[in-house]
Length: 239
Image 1 (spheres, rainbow, N blue to C red):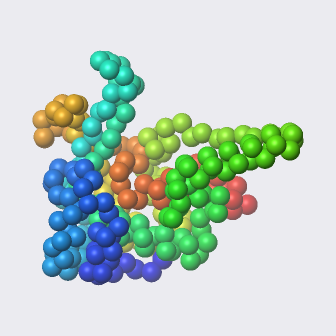
Image 2 (tube, rainbow, N blue to C red; image 1 turned 135 degrees about the horizontal axis):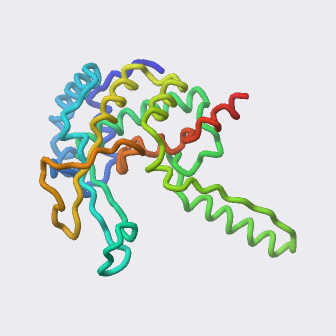
């Protein structure tokens, strides 16, 4: 992968793609303001490049806010809550730029399997495979054919994959070493603060360190999910 040089146009493009009023993280900054104050794009590009070269970010940018949304009313069971993590806007802008560069590298070298189209850019998430399944089912029923189908579900894939394997995947696919080292350092700082019904459940200095899994809400999450989560899959594809 070619070395990453972040330019103001990269910042402008990353900000343009982002929703205006999506819930921000600890900094409370919405993308709407970054879109309006275009004079700051050059400053952000310079600071992003410095952070990338120094392979470090302040902990503020790698700390999220996880809102616990109850699936059932008055539930006290922790498994009955759906966690939604909001990350700082600046961090998401930076990872959006890195994500675009990594995807360009993967596509140009045909690294990513065509079957991995759910999280691929320009896709429609889970809607696309669901529509394909629905069409196949209707065709089979109309033509009175037999059909055998199987689905593979990675249980808690986002929560279970170790960070060591994420780093190894970046190395296997020859992502730029500066980007690898920078993301590796960010992984060591990943943390979050829990909120419930609009109230913080812990003090600001107390946070939960994310030692396994993918940082929810990160712009790199689709790439992490598309790349093999199981070392065996890489060995089979390469054999």
